[in-house]
Figure 1 (spheres, rainbow, N blue to C red):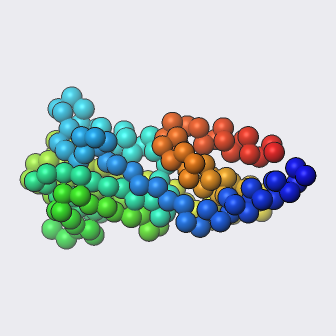
Figure 2 (figure 1 turned 90 degrees about the vertical axis):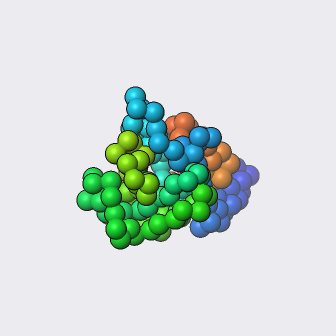
Length: 171
């Protein structure tokens, strides 16, 4: 019977892989604010500690501010006259439609220079692996990862995803 339960679990996790996404809260309870002078890299540190995938979203909560998704050059200048995305609603959700690097800055004058900016790297889809061995591994990894993220969405940032994957792999 172990093979039946494995097959059932595999089908269950495969069904979640197509719809599993996660919403990240930028800045936690404080939201999207100008960071303290001694912690100007807070947003980039937070983004580098998380794993973002296509389909995931980031929520920016703020008051009397805005958020823009911009090019790398505009990010470095902390200024944009034609951002790829702009919102000033106070509760903005941005969805990652692809893998790659995304650059966010505040639209308020001077906030970017004071650290209210962030680089998010969205991981490539597991299906893009090039070798056949990688493809075999990805076939197991994608459903497992999706199930893990569905069962424990905040645990990924704590580093438990690999442990879950290894446990699943052996059963």
